[in-house]
Length: 58
Image (cartoon, rainbow, N blue to C red; front, top):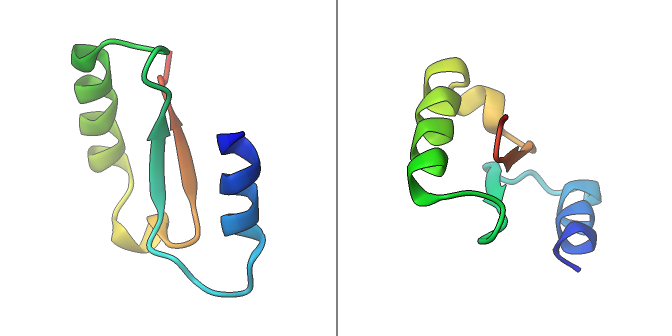
C-alpha cells in the first residue's frame, strides 16, 4: 500500500523535498541509523528534491 502512495507523490507535478522510507520490519534501528548516515554523506539537499530513497541499503 505504501508503495502506491509513494508512487503517487512522486508522479505529481509538484515538487517535494524528498523522502526516505524504511519499513518498520525491514531492519533494525541500528541498521537504519547507519543507512541514514550514508545517505547524508552521499546526497545533499538538492539531490533529494523529488526523490524517494528506500531503506535498508544492504
